[in-house]
Image 1 (spheres, rainbow, N blue to C red):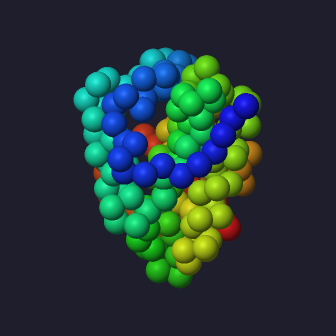
Image 2 (cartoon, rainbow, N blue to C red; image 1 turned 90 degrees about the vertical axis):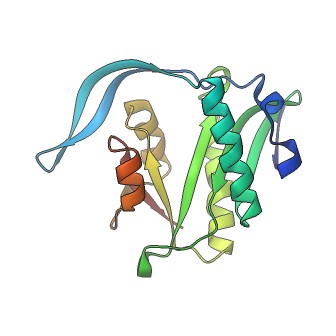
Length: 176
């Protein structure tokens, strides 16, 4: 049985992620070329190193320290998914809150965990004044299919910091 709950800063350490498997085998990605979205072959394995986990933990701690949201899914007390939302509104009338991360362990994908985490993030964002969630989303077609199922569309206003940091990401929004 999967249990969902908010995380606190004291839980955020490398040990929390010992049973979490980020690995994603990517074969095709969504890319914007000449003003149009296309699907391109781009095979690679996306996985996190120890340094990536250290950065993630630091970012999630910062999210909590600044008043943001970090929510997780556990099975048998093992972390199997998590989502985070930053607390600062941006985008003018769009009133975006940034869904800064959402990940489900490789061994638990396609079981509805991502959908429940996304819904929790949207509920929190709406309660904190957002009209829309903003997502700088991995361009893998599987990731894009998930966001499409969640009702995401191309963002009306791009967050330039995200575009610069991750130029191959798809900039999306989801109306709350």
